Amino acid sequence: MCRLLCIVCSMALTLLLTGCSNSRQIESAAIIENVSVDRQDGRLVYTFYRLTSGDKPWGISVSAESFEEACKRASEEYIPNLSLSKLELLLISEDAAQAVMKTDLPYVATQPFFSPVAYLTLCDDRTMEEFEKTNRTQQLIEQQLILLKNHNPSVSIDYLSVFNHLAAGREEGFPVAFIYSEKELKVAEYRLYTKKLTKNN
Image (cartoon, rainbow, N blue to C red; front, top):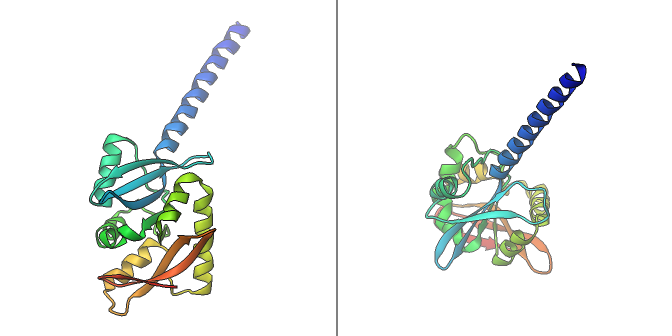
């Protein structure tokens, strides 16, 4: 009797542990850690990079006219339990910046599930390519953003502060971060206005 009870308990414990493991895998697969915005063949492409312990990013790319539309398409077609609560970085290509700043930032800023301290930076095409190759690029970008902020506190490096500046509509503009890649990743400043972007080296 005691032996039978032990066997039953072991089987129940195995089933419970297996169920929890699967649950964690499903949850992790739906958590988005980073989003990049690029222009490909004249169309905006949003890539949702899922949380992963691997060395290479795991991304799903969606062509859409806005972040809101991209989130809807990604959720309906690719990632059913899409979660943006852990978003750490919005990476926007230089070519796509003007098209998305005014539409995407108001959407992100009004959704309660986005972290208000998620980084936002503009970048060149080579940085975007590096970002797709290895998870280490995100770490390097974050290091560069922190260094820039330490040397120039007026630079906005998170999406909420950028949104607040844009909403204020200041004519003199304000600085945001720009990551570019030569032999290594470097950071410069962009002066962002309501109508145009100007890079300051």
